[in-house]
Amino acid sequence: MVPSIHHIGQKKRQSVYPNAVLFIFVLVLLSPPAWAARILESTLTNGLKIVLQEEQKAPVVTFQVWYRVGSRNEAVGKTGLSHFLEHMMFKGTPRFGKGEFSRIVAQNGGTENAFTGNDYTAYFENFASDRIHLSLELESDRMQNALIDHGEFQLEREVVKEERRSRTDDDPTADLIENLYAIAFLTHPYHNPIIGWMSDIDHLTREEMVHHYRKYYVPNNATLVIVGAFDSKKLLPLIQNAFEKIPASPLPPDVVSLERPQVGERRIIIKREAQLPFIFIGYHVPNFKDPDVYPLAVLSQILSTGKSSRLYRGVVYDQQIALDAGGHYDDLTADSDLFYVYAVVQAGSSPDQVEKGVLDQINRLKTEAVPPDELQKAKNQIASSHIFASDSNFYQAMQIGKALTVGASVQYVTEFTENIQKVTAVDILHVAKKYLTDDTKSVGILLPTQKEIEQGMAPHLGRGK
Image (cartoon, rainbow, N blue to C red; front, side, top):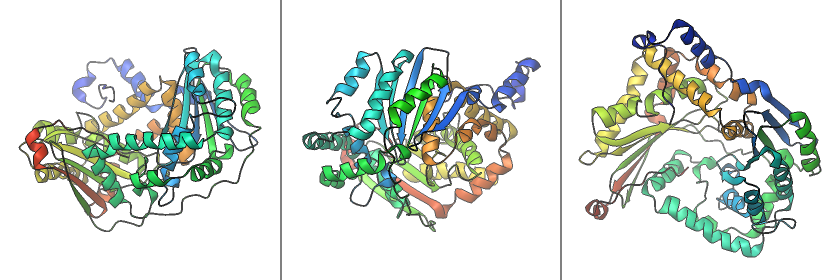
């Protein structure tokens, strides 16, 4: 949740602060983050991108390797391959056997994990600074030497299937969201779930995974991001020694399936065992490549971020027809994704009521200019979120790694809050009218079965994308 701060534009708040303090606070929000000046970018001879950011405030470091491969890069019938491979990357190499990677990290006081998205697969370790050499050894080794043993492959398939069952198949709201994306994207691979369709997971082969690994896990398709307490001039030669010997390979072809423009509302209704109805609405919007990204981010903050958002206040507090409401807009995606909102229908209310209440809040933003104080509050909330999060080495590395992997730049990240502050009320009106239209809207509604209503089981919220 975004930490709350007093917004500057609200007159009744201004008397609380001395003018000098207000001036300093405005400068903090308008200025690029201080860590931007401590970033060193480099590229090895084999094409591996390196980003080093020194943070000397604590003797710790986060080490992240980002590969430009995710569900977006999977063929029909082969969905879930990237996520499945993420699991197998912890199953050992000839040098470090099964379980050795995690054991070595834990034995040295570190933590490690990985995650897969539509556009990327990323691996990380968090260590004390004097243990950074371990990440260099471990990650350079598994970039080229993962075993992908046949027996381990078969065992891990069952683990992945159980993960899918627990996170999606047995979760009505996640199931609805997965189906909503399937109708919102007809041709683009964002149509598919990151974890994959169950039938595909059942039929993936080890040979297909080895091919996927050899194709995408190459240095010129990866970015290494390290943030923490180190000396960049001393660390860079160590990185070169560990990674530069790994040969480059021909870059995989980019995704060419473009989503055709949506020309009419799409709607899906799912009937599942759930206590309460759930509504999910998505609109096609551009990503970081379009200047509209900044007003869309502010619009999302005003409409659906937090309990002070218009959507939450409108349908939860004022009308009391929903138990929860919110939304999200992700600007850092390789291709255009969805701007979405959702609501959990209150007992005694109907999905139609709640859907109308949600759309009323959206339509207000298309017809009425956002007041200056509300606009400034939203911009300050976004800026403060970035400022507070910049205390985390992991968050800083993640923002940079994600940006570079989807095709944005470090500069996009460091200048984001500065560009957010330039958004006007006219900009908000413009993007609301342009993108939040009935013809580009996909609506998903979860309707509980009568059996579950009678049992009164608690709802479980989750996002399947």
